[in-house]
Length: 154
Image (cartoon, rainbow, N blue to C red; front, side, top):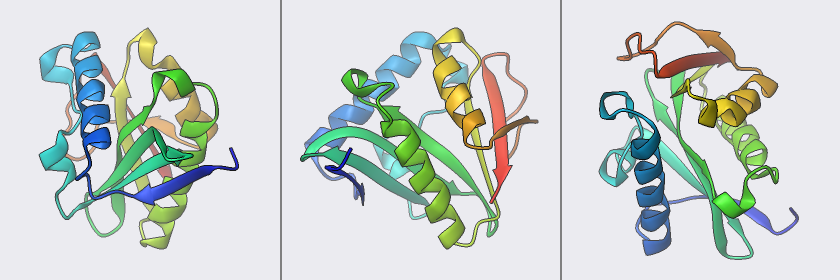
């Protein structure tokens, strides 16, 4: 992990565009359309979003973002690890970075939505490990059998 670098990404490069296209395609293959809450490139480029890419020796191996909901509350978005790097510690390193950055930006609460299906179990376990607890829907989310919501104070 010594060559891992987490960098703010302006989302202008072809590798991250392809990485996010694959993310959206995978989410759409698992989750009904009305329950897919992954953001596309245009939504991730908005000023209320900070996006990071995880690079290992110049190779994109993961990504994640936070979206400002209000002055104190942000949402984790677009967490993805390259399939060949799953369960290698990339997501933990990135989520720890995101939590630290959210604190530095002055947020006191960080929340997220993820899938309720078995596919998302490793993600839910990661979030639990890093202090997220299950909660009611937040922001514009509603109750959805395909979604679970988690939050933590910072």
